[in-house]
Amino acid sequence: MGHTYVMSDIHGMAELLEKMLRKIAFSPADMLYILGDMIDRGPDPAGVIELVASRKNIVALRGNHEDMFAEWYEYTEDKSEGYFYNTYEILMSSDSAREKIPEYVRWMKKLPLYKKVKSKDTCYVMAHASTEGIFEIWKKKDTFLWESGVTGSRRSLPGYISIVGHVPTFILRGYSKEPAEIWRSPDGRLLDVDCGAAFPEYGGRLGCFCLETGEEFYVSAAAE
Image 1 (cartoon, one colour):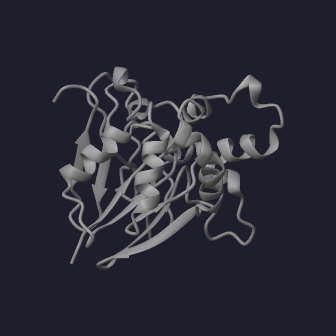
Image 2 (cartoon, helix red, strand yellow; image 1 turned 45 degrees about the vertical axis):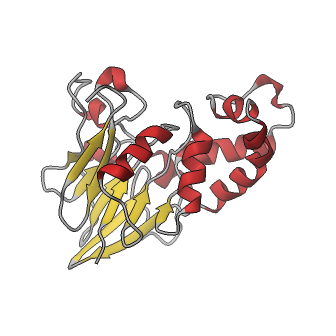
């Protein structure tokens, strides 16, 4: 049997993603959930998208950055002023990536907002920013994508362990320059796995959590 891994907020750091997959010896028997924000900030958004979209055993959720980019691309007629972050500029600078932008946008729009996963006897629920709206009749997209207070309030869902990203854990630790780590609520039922991969100046690195073993894995752009 393989293992189930979770990471979030890769933000265009394709080399770190590849490095992490090597570190965990990711195999066809394993499953990886990425909780959104695969683009913007880092240098290689296309590299992240191509790798994630090509693997049947990688499930990506939509983050606020995928949602923003897709909305901007579809509804902005004059794109000469550019996108808020660097993704559009980077994609346009490559002939192969430029041609695939519409395909990337369609892929982003189809990404789910949340996932429920059972590993052994434990039930997990995952979303980019917050899992709180999952059991509501009227589900609000912005809650899953933007809610930034969930870790501060220590809220989790009864019967589930919630896993989110969105807020880099170095913020929760008071902008410490120490290497960022996965954050857990005091009761252990809420995890933030966004370790700020695109912010090495704050000790940011890419974190990965294994559901079956509870192991944490880290890779960074800094020399190790």
